[in-house]
Image (cartoon, rainbow, N blue to C red):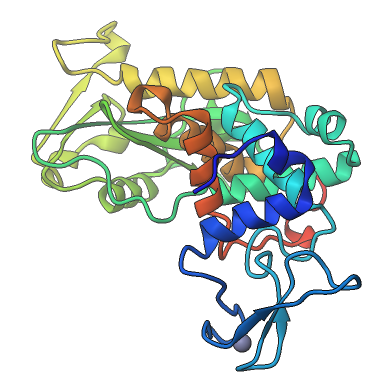
Length: 315
Ligand SMILES: [Zn+2]
């Protein structure tokens, strides 16, 4: 497979070749009918770059169809450049930076970056943890909620007291395997029901779970090999191997990155920013993933993740 280079960022035909090799390792496949035997490349001056015709269903197609690249006027070489920029940045790339670097409009830059985040969303990752593995769970609160709660949440929902309490903040649940992957979720409310179902759905039963003393996690021992917690309210943050420092430092990286690079983010897009930071952690240098391999992983995620202007519109 060819190496992603400057050429792919400036030459549209080269960009097509690169993406085709990645998405169609066994040759062009018709996205309409799934056929791959009677396909020919469309040639000629008036033909679009990367156009093929399927003689099974008689429809034309390009590698963009069925991917995040579909139905956009953005050139594929610009997409590749944007993917590489996002893959190789430690803190993310703002739409403004993308707009200046690629020479596309701000609106287009914003659209591109959200689609790329969508490609970073990993639906294929298996659950975290395993026998002998430690997983930490914790929640954090970030940014104000756009819809204020109208109902009292007395009873089950967990509400911290104090002026910076989370009742009007966006709740994020984070799960991290020590030395492994992270996965975060934006939840409407960090209730016991939400938290238990996310934790048990995403962490292997044989794992050991560490949390703080929040009552969101009481009883977790029933679902895992072991559950232990530190008591932050009593000033206890670490007791031997028992702590939730890994997930807490991950949250602070996320918050710092959001404040530094993205400033404002609408609540309905928060899950995509979380996906971006999760992706970066899960494809980090310490695991032997370099910039190019990281860009390759994004490309592997472009299929089947169409996102229309409608769903990304408006901040
Ligand atoms: Zn076909």
